[in-house]
Image 1 (cartoon, rainbow, N blue to C red):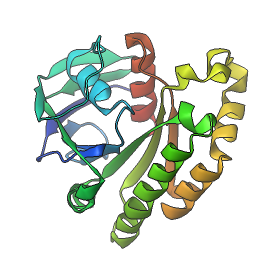
Image 2 (cartoon, rainbow, N blue to C red):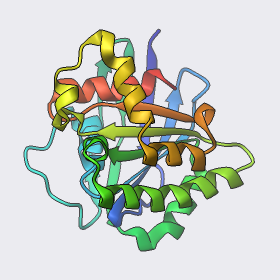
Image 3 (cartoon, rainbow, N blue to C red):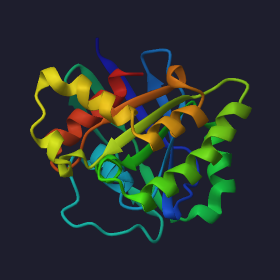
Length: 224
């Protein structure tokens, strides 16, 4: 099945000193998702800018730079396996956790919410990252619960290439890897805050190369 997808910037994006929000409008998709809006949330260094630029240009930025002002990325058209994607202009705007009110505004309009986090740091037991996630999802979870019609909610774990277990992962062990991730205490809390397992979809991967970035993006789209 081929899904032509047009993604366009729909509103000002609000990002945080520890987080970024990207709001996209799906103007045309040959599925039930036609004309939907997407909000992308996450702390610094989780890969939001990398994801937006990959969708817009098909390439991974060579050097990491924190987003400090609004940046526009031009659109393009490309294919990922059976998906035919057309990406219109997108924006990446910085911000911090003091902008949760702005996060709520864009999340309240979204049909799909993507929350990016550093899966590698969770596996390593990074307490600071865990606390930031807890703070984020307490807010996000309350916004989701208040919606009359709940949006689809995806938790996208990035930087898995930095987890030694992921580097040696074989196809028959992928399910075990996801199970290990879901059993992390902070992930279990995240699921609880955001409506339970039936309302949370997980995607794990990396954007270290264009090939693995394609795999991550494809995994998101195919689970819609």
